[in-house]
Length: 194
Image (cartoon, rainbow, N blue to C red; front, side):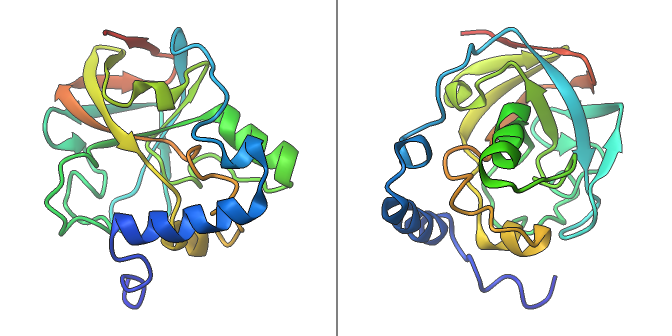
């Protein structure tokens, strides 16, 4: 989307601004290094969303084809049409977010986001997605590797029109690479492999 790219050019500038705000809050539940630990597994896929291009509304699907080394068929990052697509990094093939964090946002901060509004592809329940950074895991028959946290940024805040930046620091999801392709469906198990 024109005019949006200048806000949060690089990951380090987003993170620096975000961490500064969190320090001011001083709330250990929000400013801690990570969300409270939940079991890594077993967990399940609660919803699946994709968008054909940057800024486009997320579309809910029951099942999606994951292509190894590429992304989800029809999603903006697989099509290289996402907000950060010109960046050559390969860790945007799949994004996940824990439903518990979306619930927490509503309960604690009175910010209600509908399914897909986090702009993450897969919403899980019963999985500590933060614990999957640097680990291999399986969603249905698709093998993935967690690469890094998917921190909130001003671009996402502007798209959803809610003050989500501070409440979602270290809680906004996970970026992952797709190692082996296959289908991901609602209800699929999410299982750590190492």
